Length: 60
Image 1 (cartoon, rainbow, N blue to C red):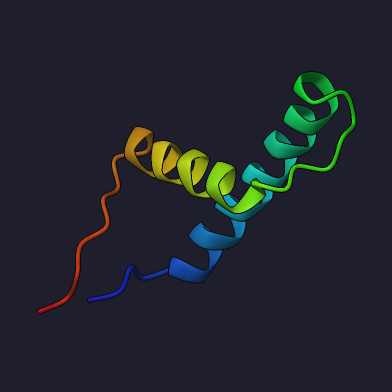
Image 2: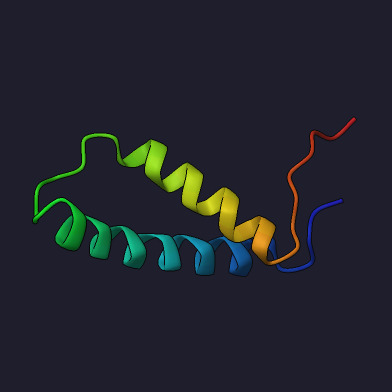
């Protein structure tokens, strides 16, 4: 069963991830475009979900 407000949760998570990735590109990569951004986003989002008490599981 989906979360009652899954869209808001995902929107917030994407916003937080984009902000954090912008800092990463600026501070860690010196302003260079991150070609591996999907991997970075996935890791950040998985960690953020876990920290917020969420998990991802396949529906039966």
